[in-house]
Image 1 (cartoon, helix red, strand yellow):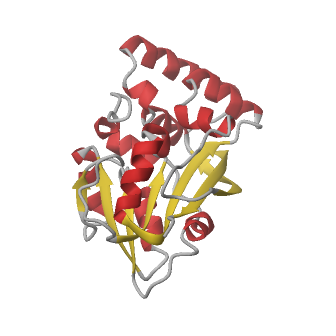
Image 2 (cartoon, rainbow, N blue to C red):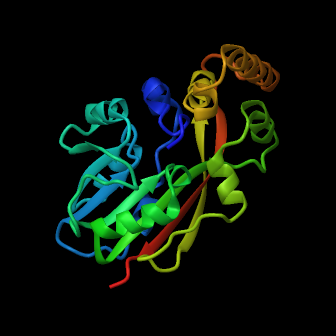
Length: 246
């Protein structure tokens, strides 16, 4: 796992402030085929709990959070104190065979080895269970968002989705995909927090961080984004699900 993949713990507050929640309809769709009175879900790469909270809100679910960074799990426990948190990765899960009805990954599959992760998640998810993958990505069809992305630089997730490169492997079957368009009002501070939560910026030299901050401020000045006002950030939520073979 790369340094960028494990860098987020140093910016937990920025991650929580700057990253959006997941649309409830998208989370529900990922887990639509998961049966049971109380569904057992593993949230892998759970971070500060954005997706964990979305899964819990569906009701009739228990969630175990797994993340490689103990700092992220500590932040998760501030909002979801009853959720068990375990340090681990998609390729090495600290869980027994067949204990989960489903596994979900939010903003995380682009960091894993998809073959090894599919195999390991397939060990933990029961036959007929579900693997769900989800991302919130900025909709760059809007001019100012495209310019913002040029200042902040792209991400591996955006590249993977743009190139239709999302793939899972045995023992999971073919992927289904759905997309949702929506927007989030964001203040200048929230937009800066969103930028600070990105792995490229977390691991960048100080001069690069300063360049990005200056570029963002110049763009926001041009757009008239002042204290007390917001911009509607257009998002595209892309979700996938696959069924574990029997």
